[in-house]
Length: 540
Image (tube, rainbow, N blue to C red; front, side, top):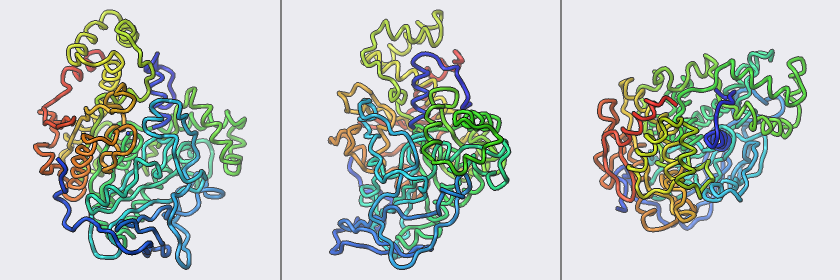
């Protein structure tokens, strides 16, 4: 539930932060055409259903930034479902990222924020955000390249497609594929549920508007991407953290059916979403924060968006940590993976993953001692069970710091639990397979103190090694080659195995096959068995 005050201690801070912000060189076998070569031109042009766009050609890869895929979401369109992009005449320059959705940016003084440069969100800020970006090695050449569509992280509240993590050039250049990234509505402007507090019928989709934006972006891909050298029948949607939560939700939306053909969820398995009751409570609380009640709710439609953002931010420190998609019974008929995997995506193969120390993103007690760790565990599981937990983790990770053990155990009882549940339910549903990996390679940033923290694997699938979290060093380059090649193979075939990353079997409940990725990778059956059984036994 989004309305909750039951989290305790450092775990409470971790959960709040996660919801508020929500990380062998081998030419991939899926490539059938040569990598792009430098071209003697500066600009590229492509036709879309709304008009012609002009992008920059950078050494053979064309990038088109800030292409509108929908109409305005401000003014009379606030809180409503998306509308088609307004057509234009002439040629529209697509040189700059579109504006980001209204959000509160994080301080770069926070080590984790600095590690991933999350305070850097280019494009300005506006309520009108329905734009996307395309990187492609070919325009109108009939290339039929796989299309990889990234949904950005940051929960349902922060982030943007323009963040440097999601630069599509390295992946398009490495694998001869088309890469698309998307901006969409966030927070209350994307997910404030007005349906049950007296709003007119035209606002019936307000609780899922941000997800409908993503569906419209995928419709744009279907209708336009062939002109950008892509194959609309070979589309992979992927995302990490909040992006994974969006992918999980999209898998349960009938309106997304046939718009994508593979999916990947990195450290963002969403099992349950927000109920209508929770959405109504959150809407009432936002009204109250704004000094309104239901009789004056029409003021929401016209007030400046910064007032809504300010009220949303105030609620984030209390009972409403985040506004996120509502199970409305129509656009989102069920919780994403509860009580079972959604039947609407039975035929979609998916990848599910987490990082060994995902939870470290929200922890700052780097100088934690053994005694301090024991106190954390006692608070979490009680005095009687604390030593059992500590013994298992110390034995399993003899070289880890108390901080990293803390991060590992919080990850096991939260992120990994949800990832395993999602993989179990997808496997049990039959149909297309699910593939699982655990990313163990520790980030070299800040002297390695974070371990394999949330988002360590994110930029690598873009073949991007330049962020502080991955360190731009030889092992990062090798991992980027492997991860990007696996993504490209999966996008094309639904199977992530490549010559450099092989022996990866689909996940089954019986064997729980998982690829454990470090400087090298290995296939393991049920690698977290002891921890999984422990947390199931403890029930916390």
